[in-house]
Amino acid sequence: MLASCLNPSCNASFRYLYDGRMFTVERVVTGPDGRSAERMIEHYWLCETCSMSMKVVVENGVAKTVPIHRQHKAASAAEAAR
Ligand SMILES: [Zn+2]
Image (cartoon, rainbow, N blue to C red; front, side):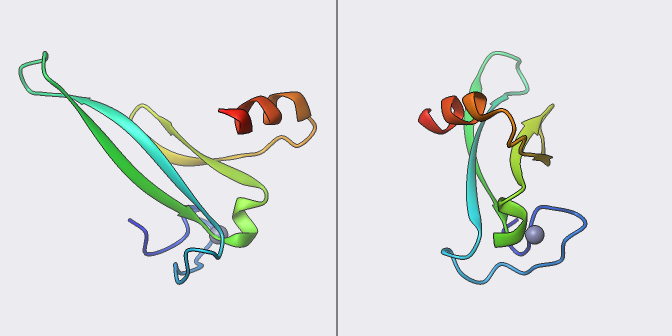
């Protein structure tokens, strides 16, 4: 999972924790009986270059990269405060 940058068009390999940015994503997975739920913590990594222009989101259980919209400064600040 952490072997390389999550950006599919980037082939940077994960080497150092201080290089790039780590994203921790919590997912709630429903059990086969439809009632029990389990929390799963997953880690994704973006290299230095990609982490400056994109971030990781999970949509429908699939982690993917989305561009950071730098023009929306207020939204970014609110996000960072979380
Ligand atoms: Zn990258």
